[in-house]
Amino acid sequence: MKAIILKTTLAAACCMMLGTSCATKQEETKKSELTTVGNPYLPLWEHIPDGEPYVFEDPDQPGKQRVYIYGSHDDLITMYCGRDQVVWSAPVEDLNHWRFDGTILVVDKNAKGEPFDSAKTADVLFAPDVTMTTDSTGKKTYWLFPNDQTGYRNGLIAKSDRPDGPFEVCNWNADDPNKVEGIYGFDPAVFVDDDGRVYGYWGFGHSNAAEIDPATMCTVKPGTKIVDGMIPGFEEQPGNDFRFFEASSMRKIKDKYVFIYSRFTKDGEFGLPTTNYTLAYCYSDNPLGPWTYGGTKYARFDLRDQRPVVCVLSPSDRY
Image (cartoon, rainbow, N blue to C red; front, side):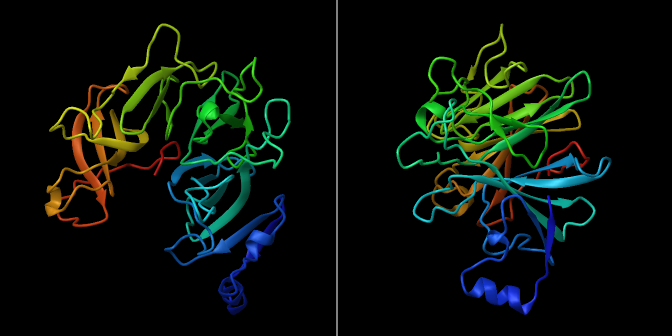
């Protein structure tokens, strides 16, 4: 795909002031590259909350690593998120040069290629996750878990041969072209361990997890079962410290499994009323627990008592 270099000039600034964007007008088959000077690292007309950054090999430059930013595309204005998902990326050695890699997924047709309704409305996609598997031949497959908010497509997943897509839905139901197979619920996170075993995490106020069948990437591994209530939710087990709300996210740091999530604070904690404006973490020696509560790693208020997670970055790690 053709790369177009956009410099931060007076013309570009005027373009943004007029409420338009040079980059968004590029054809979807092209890539655009933007030079920034730090934060915000994306242009002000772009909106990708719920970001999940990953380091993957650049398929166009073998041996080179890029950071890919996946997240919901918050452009609906009157409601959360958007009806497509896009990705931006940058070389790991130069995080001032971000490239718009384009739209990676739109879910507007069923398994037969037919629109879902007469208006050809695409599904709303919330906070996604991405992971990569490698088969015995060395072939890489990238899996997108887009958090589709249509009831009978909540567990929808898609795959691609490239980290920048495009991704295609791969778990349609065999009997109903409008439904998908799979167990994932709200805010899915999928983690591939060093031994190739796959684990999934999801939930809204109630935490679920399971070992996933690597043959499907969306169903429970045969012989195992869902861990119902992996950690207590904020309205479960009064007095618990975990207080899970949403936003499951898993990583492995050396020999520890670290589960990060959005947490509801207790009333009076940090000297403030209860809020879900915090990210907390817990850790374990096993990807499905039991877990030890670690504390708050990010909050939008008083930061004096935070205990951060320290992460050693390698090309296979998430930020």
